[in-house]
Amino acid sequence: MPATAAPSTPRISLITPDPGADEARRRGLRRMRSVAVGLLALAAVVYVVTLGRDGFWGFVNAGAEASMVGAIADWFAVTALFKHPLGLPIPHTALIPRRKDELGKGLEEFVGENFLQEDIIRERVAAATISARVGDWLSDPANARRVVDEASDVAAIALGKVRDDHVADLVTQALVPRFHEEPISPLLGSTLMEVLRDDLHHGVVDLAVDEMHRWLLDNPETFSRVLEERAPWWAPPRLNDAVTSRLHVQALAWLEDIRDDPHHRAREALDSMLGQLAHDLLNDPVTQARAEAFKDRLLEHPQVVTTAVSLWKAMRSALLGSIQERDGAVRQRLLLELNLFSQRLRDDAVLRDRLDRAAADLTVFVIERYGAEVTTVITHTIERWDGKEAARRIELHVGRDLQFIRINGTIVGGLVGVLIHALSLVVG
Image 1 (spheres, helix red, strand yellow):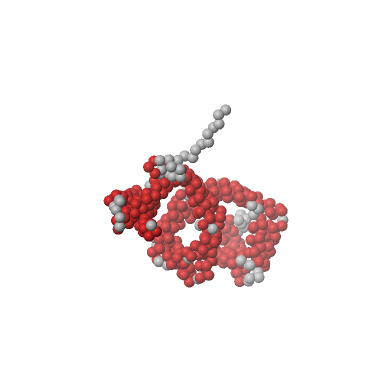
Image 2: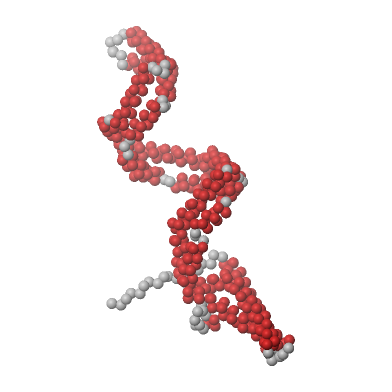
């Protein structure tokens, strides 16, 4: 059975992000090539014109000859990086098209070993003084306003993307099942214990007693009518009036006693009842089972989802209205908090140091966890490049500077040629 060839990595074409910049680089490369070729041609002309002459022109001839050698040698070296010189398959030429994968691997290792090291990262983050720069930048009201505006726009978009059915699904599929699983008795019992221990419920009792007392004062007819509806049919009206009037007076007096006496027996009875309830919620299985059953019935009621959606819609409407208003309360609060934060960043060196260390720790964590994947992108990307096109692109970016090697080779070669000619005359 014939062996199946391994699938080759698909080659991709390099995308030109800025055609205008590439055209400028191309013109610069052509110009420097013309200069290098022009110097080689000048050296060749000088060499031919001064061939066979002695004296001063002998030095010129030797310099021109060495200039041609240097220019051609450096032309060969530069060209061999990107293609075969003169199209000849000379060994160790066209290095980039032929060995781009090895070059990519070497670049990956170079970046990982020299840039993604913890000491280097911490040094660069510390030198960047990120928190100080952020504080200075936020101190400009225009910048603070820009941050608030951008954050508000993003928040408004995010709120607009959340539909009612998303909230309903969250409640029915995530929250309600979770609440069913979590026992509510320990939470209720512990909370009630804390409320009783800190006497937090006394304020609620005072408020309820005051409201009941005020209602009785303002609504004696309603109180009498409610009692008369429950009086026996055979009772005389005058007797009913007297009884209800007396009950109204006694109810007001009773509420006044409770209101004015913090140690009233009714208050103590309420405290005792609540304490017993808290104890039973924590320790009595029967009470706990009843509380859990009540919780389950409440969660299974269809009105739970409807109420959740209604609350969400009301909250979203209020938030959107304030966020979208340029001078709304939310934006003004955000501006105030940003101003306070920027002031602290500028004044508090300890805070700046703590934030810079946190930024360094975060950067080191990300690099240690994902640095290998980041550097591997270099190798994988270069492996997918077409070799010849990659060579053309790299030459377009660095070829202009490489032409100076040819120019320098021409000039230095000429000087060396003159020196060698002078030494040969001295020795000879």
